[in-house]
Length: 138
Picture 1 (tube, rainbow, N blue to C red):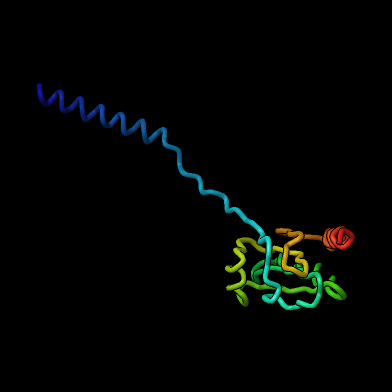
Picture 2 (cartoon, helix red, strand yellow):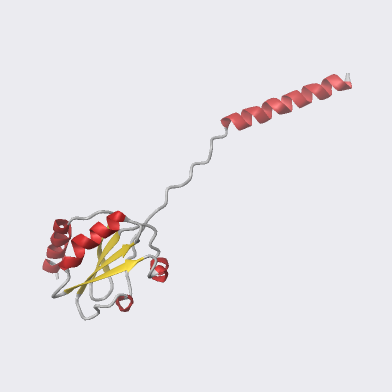
């Protein structure tokens, strides 16, 4: 009789374990959350005398990064500076500002406040429109 009870308890435990494992859903990896910094130290990027600065955080292995630099770097001049921060050359800046995705383009004012940011591809027209809007508002 004891063997029958023991067998029934073991079977019941196995059924419970099987049900629990069947209901258990695999854990889904959380999607990375990317956030742009709200402020930067302009001394980290040069062109401190210009009131506006475009900063492109990039990686040498990113073809979209090269396109963003190609589109935005010619906008530099006059009151607008440009700085490219490539991951392999400036890893400490990527880490300092918590850059988790590239390309990231920041438009920064004279005080280091990020006034606009774009992750991923961007058109020259988009940046020119943002610059016109922000410059008109100052």
